[in-house]
Structures are given as structure tokens and as C-alpha cells.
Image (cartoon, rainbow, N blue to C red; front, side, top):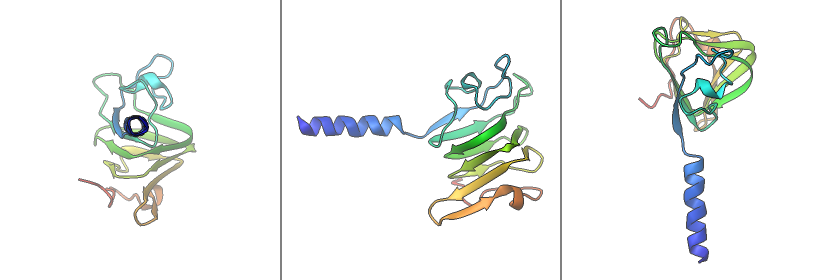
Length: 142
């Protein structure tokens, strides 16, 4: 019986913290661009450190690009389509623990901080400093 309980706890913990892809939708009335609005996300949950975030181009749907206004946001990975936009305001910090693909000077406005963290080598890259005309994470899985 103890073995069954241990197996059940192991599986439930694995599914609870499994990395999931979450897609930006935006356009929730009154919070059209708010990163912190659950209804702006495909799963109706604000992404967390276990999330693989995908930001598509929204000019033909909601016309609402995501804006992180404050706080520290942590993600597993970030992928931004080249025609999409992301804004990180002055009081915000975005930390990506894995790959950060599609991060370019013309589609990401960084007033605060974007950190790409490679946990395998304890290396931190402040993308605002490293971002020239284009930047692709050296830690990309693709």
C-alpha cells in the first residue's frame, strides 16, 4: 500500500510541475496588454517558472501585445515570433531559465531587465546589455 501511495505522489507531482507551453492571446477588456491577466493566456493562467511561453503575432486578432509592468517574472523558456512585440517596463524583470528565441531589438522593448540564465554553467546574461541589433540565446535548444 505504501508503494502505491509513493507512486501516486510521484506521478501527481510530475504532472503538477510539468513544463507546459502557454500562448499569449491578449485582448481581455480592461487588461488588453497585461501580462498578469490570466484570461490573456491560452490556459487562463499567468505563466510561471515551469512555463514555455510563446508570443505570436497578434495584429490580425486582438492587436494587444504583452506588457510586463512590474515584478519579477520567471519562465522556463520564451519564444517570440519576429513580428510580435513584448515590452518589459522599468519596474519589471523577466528571467528565462532556458532558451530565449526570437528576442530582437525591434520586437522587445526592455526598459527594465531581461535575464537569460543558464543553470548548467551558472552563467547569467543581461539581454539589455547584450542586445545589439539581434540576439539569439546561445542556450537555445533548437
